[in-house]
Image (cartoon, rainbow, N blue to C red; front, side, top):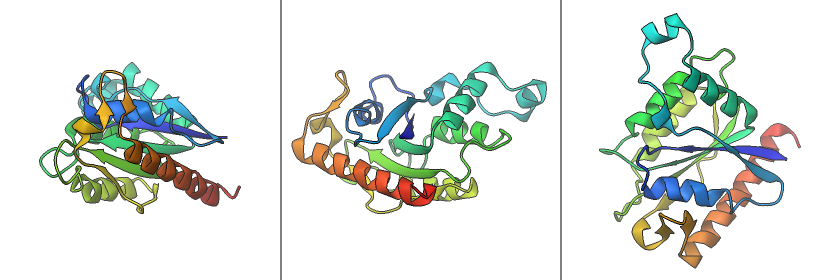
Length: 185
């Protein structure tokens, strides 16, 4: 059973990407289960002075949850053509753990946006950051959920567009196969 951590890139409660992340847990193929990861908004801004005083409890909780996951799905918006600050902050904190809970884990990215590009520009920068953590990235097929307001019910946390749901199910199935190929299963 592959335990999939789902990391939300947005800290906003009514975020389209957070709703897509909640929906992902219900779209997993057989052989995968979701592992709840804390929202990045629960973490203090990374500061070496804080770390020198000891790992903050909220960060330790995030590290423990990520360590329990076999793979990672990041579901995120794009902010100013790049990675949202809260998501980058979470990765910065996770990278300080020893051992690093991100290293050698398969990861895939879903970007979500009400716009026409679906958050496409966040992928490149996020991949660079994930590579720096020695993660194994499934780069294709890319997932960019454009026009997300018409495809995701934010309050219910589910996908309302049948084609989008089918695509996401297929992507998660392909990611499961990708994860198995790296685990030697």
